[in-house]
Image (cartoon, rainbow, N blue to C red; front, side, top):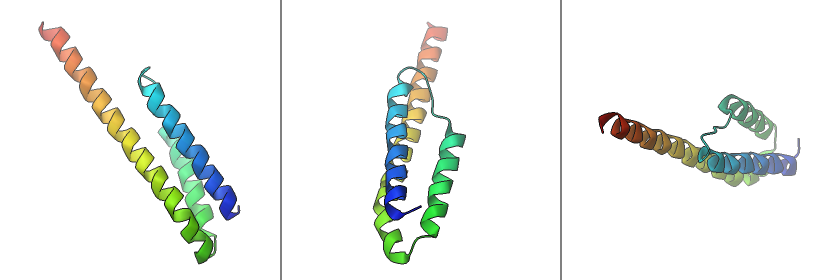
Length: 92
């Protein structure tokens, strides 16, 4: 895979995460096993690049990592909200 193909793949993964954030509102979650496999594959491809090309992939990879962290935070807050709603319904 070329540097540009890897950057394109990372962009596609970021789009999937963005769509996943929207789907959280409907109670749907991303298949994190699939995401992990795709991220692992992208990282393996980066390892094959020259140091100069790998540096250019760093920023898109960091952006993907930030997106995944935000998604995880959204799941955590969504779960906490549902737990609070459930407790309120049970108590009152």
